[in-house]
Image 1 (cartoon, helix red, strand yellow):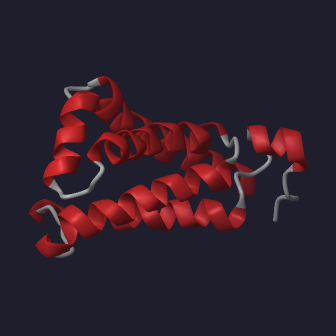
Image 2 (cartoon, rainbow, N blue to C red):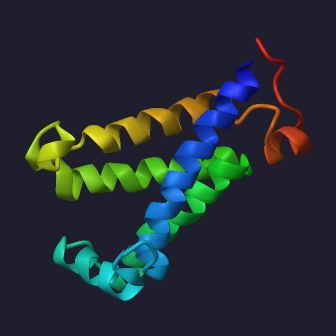
Length: 138
């Protein structure tokens, strides 16, 4: 049952992060695309924006893909955690906790879920589980 629970967590968290990343990288789902996201990065005083914008966008997309597949899961989880910490620091913290006020509630949940995967691993039903052998279900 442990691996099934981790699979559900990975599919939803990874898929959601891929979708958010696709908005920034490709302009999918009415997103800004990489050029506009890089300009947003510049407006947040994250320099050099030409590097940090794409790093943030691809961290969401590829980190989400890593989590979804359970492939190099710790690296994907760390990429997502890092991106969410920066989002809280530069955008959401000043607005308080609640998401309806553009606060960090949602980002905190993403950090918690990513940290759980970082600590537990992706489970047996994952690429990592196939390659490296998953932990026995508890």
